[in-house]
Length: 495
Ligand code: AMP
Ligand code: ZN
Image: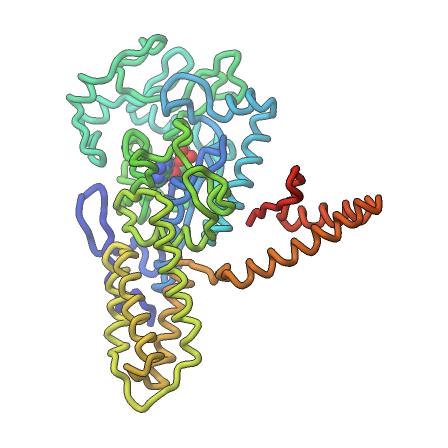
């Protein structure tokens, strides 16, 4: 018997605006697609929050016993500046600025993205397709939409005919935007007079001579529109209709609205049963974003090297901080909030580690079975990780009570707590054990580095530069940098 047969999971479906009982199309199997990054820059913590939110979803579905196929794309072409219909391709622009090939940019930032998500202990998706690897499929999809009368060619571009689509469908079904408002508020941009209506969006764009990312097509040399890749890659790997589609809240319109229209126009079916949108991470009350510079990079968090931070934080602590908020709520990043999360994180880990040392008695003063179900209830309620974490702290209180001999626990209950905590802390929340940097060990490091500084000074005085350099270089390799000043030698440490 799989857990999903006894646990009733509800998912907040953004297209319905309410929680619904989750029923996959094929019993026991789940298809999930999440919009991945545009790999033209380093990912910031805001991006990481969205991917951590969906990692929680992926992990919990697997924990329930579902076989999940999780597809998350890499956008390596077609995403223009400012999410606009005109302008430079983000990747091509970065390639120009860094004097690299576009595919070098893609490789560099894809590796960075994977490294960072690994540090956060995110599980890799089952398939990670790229837009440039699916140009042929995108051209085929455009042909289908044209054949179905819902797209038209103009001057080497192909546009989706929004008004025609809206005659027998509902454009705005996801975002709640009204077609009349869209018509009233969309301006005709210079160079786009060829569109039937200004709200029509591009499926294929003609490449101007300076546009270096280009492919041949029946409509001339060009490149696909940004929205199309997700329609094509999700239907290729998950089917024309699949279970869950996720992404950040900022992608709801136009990106996901266009995906619905394209899917329906190409295949005649609603592509997605459950739409999930993760909310934004903010810094100083404003959305973290690459374009505005209002962001913190993960590595800055891990080293403490950012003016918004007083110290370094471990990736698991940052992950715990994010999971202490519901994925549908806005979360504001602050040093104080992270410090509070860090304390909670170590309290949870300490309690877990001390379980093995608890003395078992003949009776328990805590209903462990009911507590375990309340952990499931929290996650079954639309992946409510903050409520789950509050439940985990209920058992932490009990464990500390047993330690203080105010409570008692039986051996069977202790084992059940251990298995349940391990399931939720490590498998579902995806946290990892972290060595707590304690004051005693940092004092020891301080004394050891002081001794090595003395050895180096003596070597330098003796003109034994070989020894002096070995001391400096090896320390640097360990992340300890010696700085010579007029008051002697100081050191700084990178974690
Ligand atoms: P991008 O590479 O800009 O397309 O973004 C990749 C993913 O990160 C998308 O799902 C965005 O919705 C998401 N995202 C961007 N900024 C933030 C933020 N400040 N907080 C949470 N998610 C974000
Ligand atoms: Zn997408």
